Image (tube, rainbow, N blue to C red; front, side, top):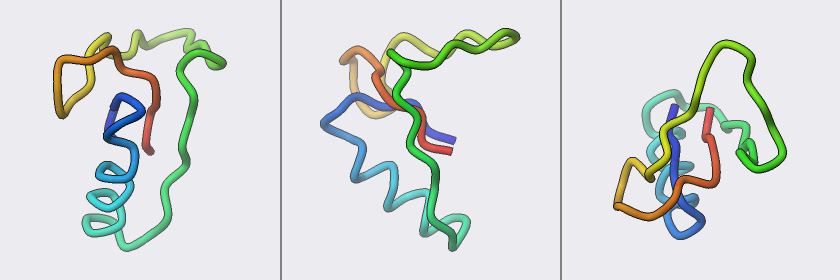
Length: 55
């Protein structure tokens, strides 16, 4: 699972495919709410605001 900004979506997809050998789901964090989990605010690759969950 990766939480990333728009700039790092492709990188996160590549990392996911390399690790799991399967296509990930891309979730827009602006359109999705989680009842039991608060996603990180910052991108896992840089200090920009996280916008997508790659899972």
